[in-house]
Length: 102
Image (cartoon, rainbow, N blue to C red; front, side, top):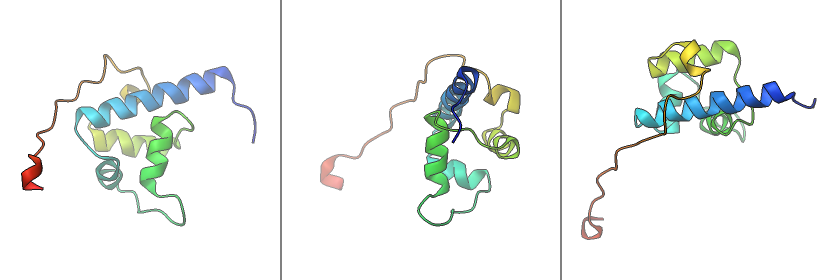
């Protein structure tokens, strides 16, 4: 495996931050985003959910066609997906049922 150049690392990190920001802003789970983008469940040990997680952590980036499918599923342009998020991730708190109802 080749060593990544600093620009590659920055781009992967930027893509990952924006992907996570957009996904959480829409309150989508990894599985829901995978399904919305039309990904198959994956084969072998690595599921699509795990791959999206790796993209969000900036470990790797998807192919251009895959990034386009993610952007379409999120309702944004590909250009928006590869730029820094405009602000911090703010996700509204979810209602949690009292333990007695569990």
